[in-house]
Image (cartoon, rainbow, N blue to C red):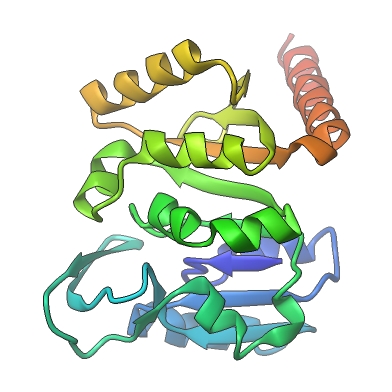
Length: 226
């Protein structure tokens, strides 16, 4: 697993409750990275990378930590913070070059990172879990709808959509252009975001199993409340 925007290690802690898979944690904000290193030092098979991720040629102009997040602003010249592409980071952590799970929570850079790594995604076909936040994506210089089209072109087929509170919302196919546009412009108008799990066409059985599990979980919660 690759965890981009690992923050202080909360996602790692959840994954470690269920699996011992190797995890590469990528985090650029200095204070978050310090806490990440402290929180994961006793966990097995964790590698850390202190950098932000973006596109080739990006430069960090400023970092604005707010609550538990850090908004990155780009500028024309290199700043103090390190930023590179995912492929450049993986060159330093070669065993993760074929990781089959890529989670991103990069404060608007999620779609930019995916757009930059189409060749990697085409080759490895990882399951993707990322934040779809049109307003922040555009601030980072990426049109998010184009990224959904790019995923479709390289073989991704199924999206499981989650509300920003983590609740499963719906399943969409990447060939459902009208429905994707409806979701996109709803988020644009509300300046909201959702989380997206994206599955390659070769992994449609996994997508179906996850959807089934979400409905089973919903049924259990409904039964418990009655």
